[in-house]
Image (cartoon, rainbow, N blue to C red; front, side, top):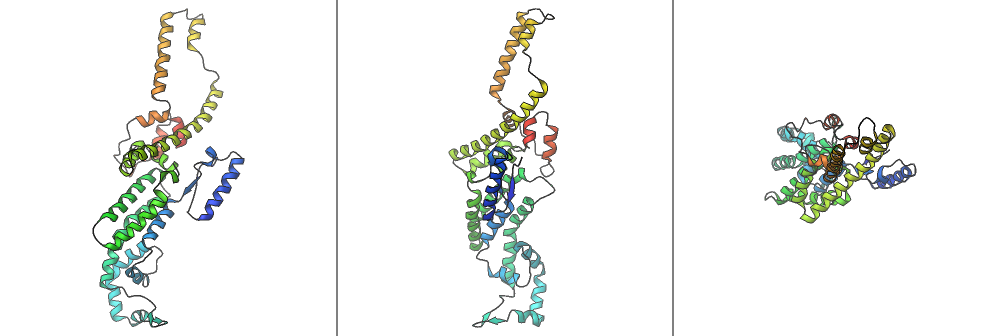
Length: 339
C-alpha cells in the first residue's frame, strides 16, 4: 500500500504522479484513492522561494561569485566574508587578479564585475544574516537521520513569521524588496491549505507536544475566524478519515481472531452458575449506559488523544516521537499504526 510519494516541483512530476495514482488504484494499492499521495518537496519549494528573492541579484553578490565559485549563494557569501582582507590585498598586489576584472567585451563593457570592495563586504554580511535562517531550515527539511514530517508546520510558522517581519521592518529597502518577492512565492505554494497535502498537518497533530492546539493558535493568528475554523476542520476530517481506514482493517482482524462478543446480560440470566439477579442486571444496564455516554463524548481514540494534555516540551530538540508512540501503542493502537 503506497501512502505518500515526495517529489520536487517539476511539472513532469505532476503527470508522473497522476499516472502512478491511476495504476495503483487499479490494483487497490493506493490509500484513500490517492488523496494524500503527492507531496511536493519542502526543501525544493523553499529553494524556489529564496531564488525568487535573489532574482534581481545584487552587484555585490555577483562580484563575490566572480571570485568564489559555490552553488549555494549563502555558503558562498559565508565563506567569502572571512577572507575580505585577503581579497583586498590580492587586488592591491596580484596583477593577474586585478587584470581579470579589467577584461572587456563588445563595446568596452567590463566582462567580469568586480572585484568586491569595502561597501560590497558590508552588503555581503547583510545578505548572510538575511539568508542564514532559510539555509538552516533547508538543512532541517533535508534531515535523513531524524523524523522531519512532524516539524514541517513548525518550519512554516518560522518562515512565514520571518518574511512578515522582514517585509515590515524599516531598514534596507533592498532586503525589504527581496522579502516581499519571497513572500509572494511563499503564498503561491503554502498560502492556501486547500492546495497543500493535509498529511503534513496531520503529522504535526500526531506529535503529542503540539496536537491540534499548535495549528489552532497559528491559524487564528494568520486567518479570519471563519477561515481558521475551516482549516482546522479540514485537518480533523482528514485525520478521522485516516483513522476510519486503519480501524476498519484492525477491527475486522480482531473480530476474526476473537470470535463473537458475549452478551453479559443474557449470560447472567441463562447461566446455571448465576441465578437470576435483578440487581446485577440493573447494574450491568447502567454500565452499558455509561459506556454509551462515554463513547458519545469521546467517539474514537482521536478524540481521546486530542483531549488529553499535550506532552511537556522539556527537551524539544531531543524528543523522539517514534519512541513515544511505541510506548503508548497499547493506549492508541490505531493512531500508532497511522504514525
